[in-house]
Length: 508
Ligand code: ADP
Ligand code: MG
Image (cartoon, rainbow, N blue to C red; front, top):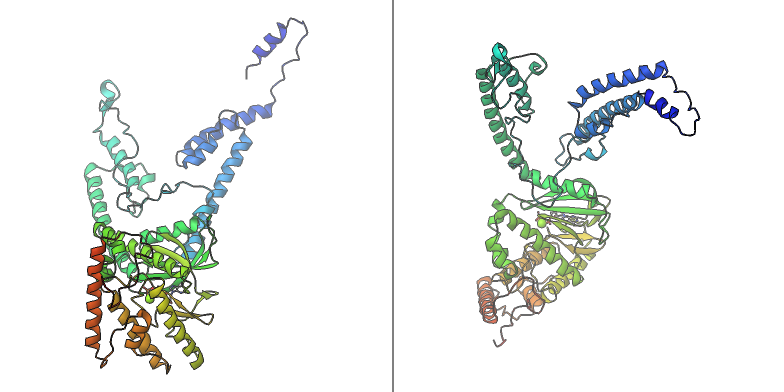
């Protein structure tokens, strides 16, 4: 501290008054200043390994008092221990669960910020860190040597090189065990380092291959990392409170139960389901015709890569659900569509999903009620929504609050789809067979049901299925010709565009 300047200033004072004597510097202050310097030094070696945020915290400038610094260091130590504990709890909490919950937000020290807040997909391959690229600049000057005269040290110097190689082991992938060599003054020759590096490369490739296989196989039962990330983001954004567990794993989708969170534009139900359309494409290949020939999606289908086709399925389910909802058909409410994940309201209560019609234990009276509801649903679907479910069966109808609810409508098409009426006929067969088997005497035959739903008077005749089918195919053909005459349709369509097929007697 420069006290002399202060006293000189006081003497020059034009008012002639003598300034107060300069305070003597107490010993404790001198001691604390020394302590501060000492801590500063310790701190600089500390900050070399600390995170950027912590550095910022500690680089408070020369005014930092020792107490503050000590407090900060203690706090940091505390935070680290807290984070370690949190990490252990996170690991324990998640266990082998397929969906893991991150405790990241509760951490005190955040060494890595999630840079991917954008909507873009994270390409896992691209973001992979190259472990062999030196992060730090070379310490040898550009000219390739340092020192003078006989003390000259070139970049090829065995000791420098050896130490540098040892330090570079730090850049190996985290799973590579490098022992405690890093802490020692170990000099690795280029030859040894290179073979180590080579070994790591091949190990990493091997493990990546294994990992990839594992991911693919788990995707059969649950979801892949991309999907997990999307689901995690939904929780992080507060749309979902919690993802609880898997309700069903089908061929084309995995359905999860979750607790609803908040969305700005609309209320989110307390219980929701996430329908994750599978990104393994094998099963979808044979479903192409549901979407390829659906003129609403036709133009887009041909231009898309397979992953985007999956998203189209989710989108299709969303559109179909909305259309049905508008007509008053009991279906889940759409909450959100995010890529290939559709969030919708949960049909059921307290984590217990409503039973499928196949599993519902209904009295004969209720079964009869259910039948008439299904008949009405099918008529409404066809005549008001201009849709054919195309996968209607006791597996895709739920029984909840004395009502039949329709689900699984991603494959639903308009009746004017080139195979729409064939799909409807199949639906009718499933419905009629199911209710007849369950003893509903009023259940119509498949032919009667088809005519009752469509209002088409396809002659039933001798009830020969082949005859009936050829009538249906002929109708589909007439419709297709008619559509072609009317011109190409584009998505989305108004209800007028998507009207039911022409009646056999319609003059076109
Ligand atoms: P998939 O195409 O795999 O058959 P679904 O939409 O039929 O997919 O869903 C599979 C199962 O998940 C259903 O049988 C039903 O038990 C359950 N499920 C689907 N959606 C809901 C929902 N909104 N509420 C309750 N359970 C549902
Ligand atoms: Mg289903």
